[in-house]
Image (tube, rainbow, N blue to C red):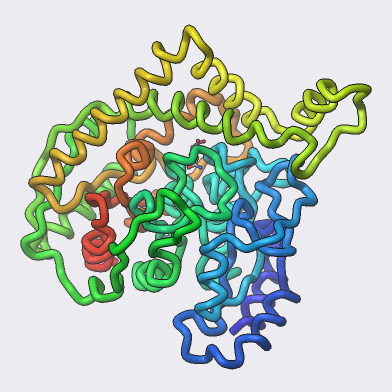
Length: 444
Ligand code: GLN
């Protein structure tokens, strides 16, 4: 299997550019070492890993100049779990720098392209992972999702992306962006593969203080069940937002299919998603500004040559090492956490966060799932001008899910007239991955 995937990488990688590093040697070595793992769940299966998850002795760059030559001395827990399951590491995928962005254009190295149309972005920030799966350059990939970065690129590339419940998958060894929102999950060709990947990567990890015990399940068992009797809520206000008409029509027709399959579908009313978006763009930058303080030229990666004293070294390292979007987030985050502004921004955002979580809890007392589009449009053209604020707006359907900590999956539900994939989002209650997989499988 490995060789056919490597061949495919050689065929298309010039155009798609999903990988920052292809680890052919490592995959060959793993194949030899895994002789005794022939019965393991992912024996010999080629998997790609987003370049913000630590891989021992293999560059982990976060698509940043800051970490361009950084080789971690240990594996992230998810990488360990893949190895234990016999998976082969095909390489590390491109992303927006430190996972900040929605197109993968914020990578400090190069742009990845959407395999469905090379003039379009694959989405982001896990754009390399989604493109690699869609182009057949790996059997499955890992992404990370802080505000939509697994689901949105999955939607744009016509594949399946699952953001698990916060705490279901260990973040140990994931380079932190916004720790209270970050979550690792699978990007796969279909729902069954997603369930199998979850069986491998989920579960308690004492090395992650937010990891949840005793909730791991066999997710493949949900593949056999149907949706009859399931109650599905359609948030009316979400569908009134600015959505591309082709996206809306395609999502609505998928909802009809759920009805035909026996689900009870009903309109629900939820808090305006723009509050979640506003809270996200305070909380995520605030946490990022704190997490990224460690890149000071002393402990990791880049150190500026142009400095006479320590303060100048610190400043110049960060000036040279970070790209524009990362700097923008650090400035916003530092501002929101400053004394005098903390109550007005950060504290307020945390209060909004609680209200949004309560809102989801209220809906899930009555409903099994919520269905929305994954994104307001299909993949953006690489040439188009992108205004940061407009870009933030495209996260409107995915961000509330991270704010509430609940799981959600994007699955393909059709194409627009230009043959670009459209994605539908299934949102579940905490630990509702099984229900999501069940409904998603019905729609496949
Ligand atoms: N687009 C969002 C952002 O730029 C989401 C990023 C993510 O989920 N990592 O913050």
